[in-house]
Amino acid sequence: MEDTRSRRGMIRGGAAAVAAGAALMAGQTKAQAQEPMVKHSPYPAPNPPPAKKPMFSRAVAYGDVIFLSGIGYHKPGTIEDHTRGVLDEISKALADAGSSLQKLMKVNVYLADLKDYDAMNKVYYSYDWGDIPPVRTTVAVAGVPGNSLIEIDVIGYI
Image (cartoon, rainbow, N blue to C red; front, side):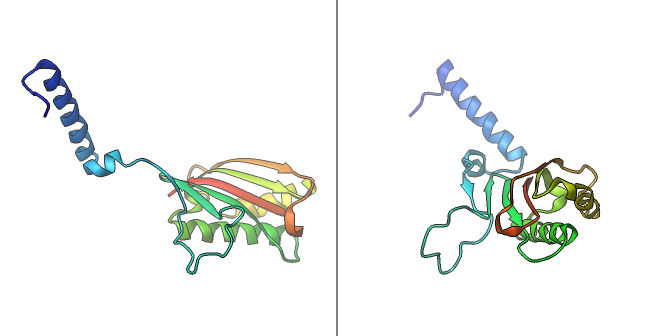
């Protein structure tokens, strides 16, 4: 047992009390204040679990930050169809995780052909990105898997 009568014991005890008080003022319990952040899936575990470990996750969260894997559109159509399909799927995946397009901080757009940039932007602009839209990088790549004309991945918060 620590002796709180010594100067060292009083300092240690006081520091612990200040930390506990700050956590309580922030609306956290002592356990929450000390809970380490860990990488986790923002979605419920599949039931039954897959027979083989997947190659990548649909999304990973760390604390309140969510990283959504790249999503493409694997059906016939124009760049407008593909962009709308991808953004609708991203919106659904974010909603399933407790987030939204308005909570995105970073968007990466991968186009199969840079000539689709203006048409993609028209569809992209029609979505509600909030008062402060996320930062965005758009590049043309050698190819997008699955014959998609576009793939998008995002980083946001829950």
